[in-house]
Image 1 (cartoon, rainbow, N blue to C red):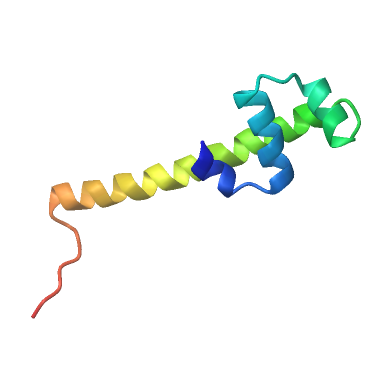
Image 2 (cartoon, rainbow, N blue to C red; image 1 turned 135 degrees about the vertical axis):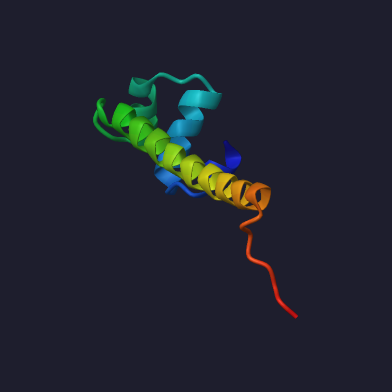
Length: 79
């Protein structure tokens, strides 16, 4: 979670952290951020979507590297 939150913009990171880690409800998050009541939920959804994309990219990169290593297709330096 902390790695993915580092890649989110600060507002989305605060909202996701407040919701997932602190258990604060979206209306209260909106109030703390000083925005309309529905915007807290929107920020949470956007933040979670962005985190999902971050994890997908991270795991796809790791999976591709592991797969190429396992199949012997990893690039090799020739001397």
